[in-house]
Length: 188
Image 1 (tube, rainbow, N blue to C red):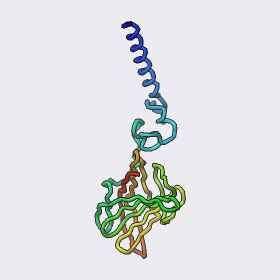
Image 2: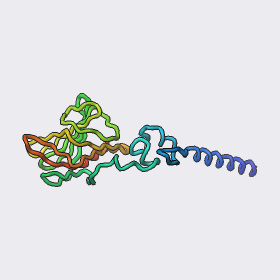
Image 3: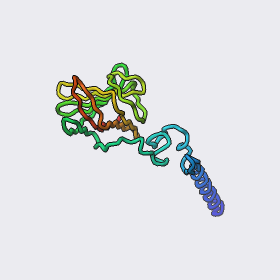
Image 4: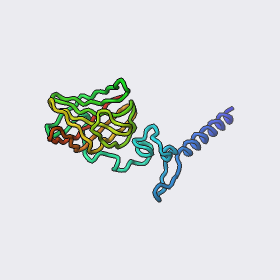
């Protein structure tokens, strides 16, 4: 009986080690051999990855995926000052999503088409009703609203947390230009 138990234990150990090793694959990426799970080479954003095939269990993501400024979570640095943001998430009747970071004299609103927005880098549009693949941004200071169609929004989903970052964008309204960098993070 002890021999049968040891044989069974040895077989299970071998199977566990064999299948664990098979999960890692050696692949050639840009002339370099990289070891990682098969999901790191499928071109899809899989659970645990920051962007498709990088971050988490995969190789680190290149710096092009990250904003050129360092924003603190739920904070805005603007021409008008530095503000802590209270972030809310709203779905409109048309199922578009609005992420709003509010502070005592204004807000930063990020609009996108549809309830979901995938991790990625999106061109900003001045529309509060953006097309698919676009992100709209509005900076409200007092009673004056500023929209922008220059710059990009960096969008990340990690688990059920959504983070949107913008760096040194310049919304303008009635001839006034403002500079805004912000991080809006919320659990979805």
